Amino acid sequence: MLRKNVRVLQQLFSPSVQHTLDLIGIFVFAISGALLAVRKNFDVFGIAVLAEVTALGGGLFRDVVIGAVPPAAFTDLGYFLTPLLAALLVFFLHPHVERIQTGVNVFDAAGLGLFCVAGTTKAYEYGLGLTASACLGLATAVGGGVLRDVLANEVPSLLRWDRDLYAVPAMVGATMVVLCIRYDALTPLTSAFAAVTAFVLRLLAMRYHWRAPRAWNRRSTVREE
Image (cartoon, rainbow, N blue to C red):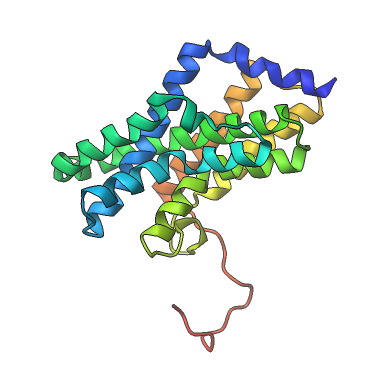
C-alpha cells in the first residue's frame, strides 16, 4: 500500500519537465566539477572527466545499487553530453563563470534539493526500505561531489568542518520524503516541500556559514590538519 504512494512523484512534473530539471541539475553540478579542475590546473581531458563524474556520479551509484541497469547515465545521451557542454563552457569562459559563482551555487542548491527527493523516491520504488532509500537519496545528491574531490586529491567537502553545511540539507530532504511515505502523506505538494526545504537550508547555510559541530570537548592537543 505504501509503495503506491511514490507514484505521485510522476504527477508532480510531466516526464519532459522532469527530464529538463534533471539536465539543469546535471549541468550545474558539472560546472562545479569543471571549475575545480581548472583550479587544479587539469588539462581538457581532466576538466571533462571531473565534470562528468560530478554530474553523474551520485545517480550512477544509486542506479547500480538498486539494480536500475543500465543506469540512466548510459541510456540517455543527453545525460552524457550535458556535462561535456558544461566542461566546454568552463574551458573557454572560466573567468566569467567564476564571477557568477554565487548564481551557480544557488542552482547547485536547487539541484541538491531536487536530487535528494528524486533519489529517495526512486530507491523506494525499486524495493528498498525507508532508511536505505533515504541514504540513497543522500548519495544521489552528494555522491558526485565526493567523487570529484577524491579525484582532485582533496578531502571531500562534506567531511570538512570548515565548509558550509551541504550533506545535512540533503539528509533533511530525504528524511522528509521517507516520513511522508511512512505516514501515507507523499503527494506532489509534500514532495515539492521536501525539495524546497533542502534548497532553502542549503542557501541559509551558505548565507550564514552554518557548519556541523566537531568532536565534543575537543582539545588543542589533537593536531589540526
